[in-house]
Image (cartoon, rainbow, N blue to C red):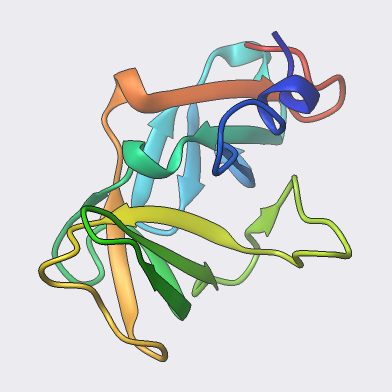
Amino acid sequence: ANAFVAGFIGSPAMNLITAPVSGGQASLGNLKVAVPASAGASAIVGVRPEGFKPTGAGQGFDIKVDVVEELGSDAFVYGKPAVSGIQLANANAEEGAQVIVRWDPKNPPKAGDTISVTADSTSVHLFDFQSGLRL
């Protein structure tokens, strides 16, 4: 599999986030993801919307909320990275650059809020920044 295919499978699609790599870790703000030595200076970190989990303020990947889509048993939060230096690899002209997070519909954030999320290693997919191939 590669990042190109991962960005199309599923609805909503996988979040593909370009992150700087240092000391064997890709950094999404305070969310650190272990990467292989072959990763280079940047890696693409892939996480499906349901792979993100809420964490304490400032303890993970901070996202500025643009819109919350409430769908009864689910809520999807759409937002932008609140940390500079992080870009979305699957941004397009139609949707713009948005991170999508599945959220508890009983306690959704509001537009303008900043949420902090984490992801366990089983929810993270890593791709080479240059080739897009899975690491």
